[in-house]
Image 1 (cartoon, rainbow, N blue to C red):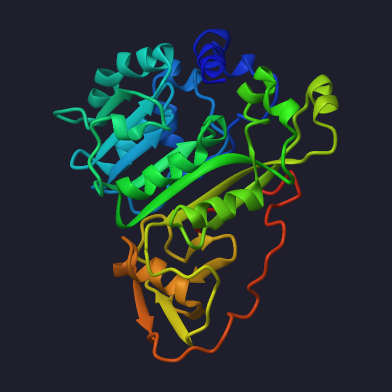
Image 2 (image 1 turned 90 degrees about the horizontal axis):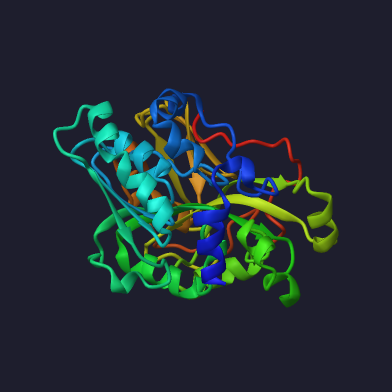
Length: 346
């Protein structure tokens, strides 16, 4: 299957127009990113096959790793956001995609006015990151855009992500998920696999895999239903529903498997760039500026132990436990309205 994927993305696909479904199609970016995206090299953008947004908040000076970086679109976008003192490393297994990305390294260095390029590209498999020259605990943020579903060993990917992240670092990534487990006969279909569908995890299997890999409380940022829009492929898939979803997983060992209530709260200072009025941690934590916002212990830690700490005041501690945090449940988490969009900041 790995060889099939390399062939599909290296030789069969020459642009996003060659895709047979809408699974690997990008969505509307936030306004503050549109001017940067418009400046990226046309060939880099044309060979892009992502399904979501992977530009979280507060990136200046960050070290970022992109798993399955392809033509380099997200790498170059993030290189502008981290600044010349930051660094973005892209890993991809497809020679043709790496050639595109590397060919335009000088173009983007000059575009952003850097004396030296702050990006590098490595050839490798995302299931074999331990074979690359990557230091444990080095990265502030790891991203991936519609690539984890293509991996043949997703558990290994998540374990390596945990190892490579700094304490308090974040895995912020978009991918495709199914509302049930995909039958083996479909998993072995190279076109369905290459289209980012049949390799997709059942969403609850992903949640449990994340927890087993050391990410105790995966948080859903945004999601949308994929409509496929190919009758022949829709017939093969039957009643399986697929979703594009963005998750954020924090490398914080103290996180608990459930949202526990310790009577804590936070106050957002409104100081994050592009987020003056509210900060959106995930799809059910939109924290308004200046307002005392009750949170569970996990949310408190995600903010206090991460790069976001300076933007919040923290109320409370872990001295008294009040049981499960009200409203914490387990249901299919995704938006079923295909028109639903993401709002990263307000």
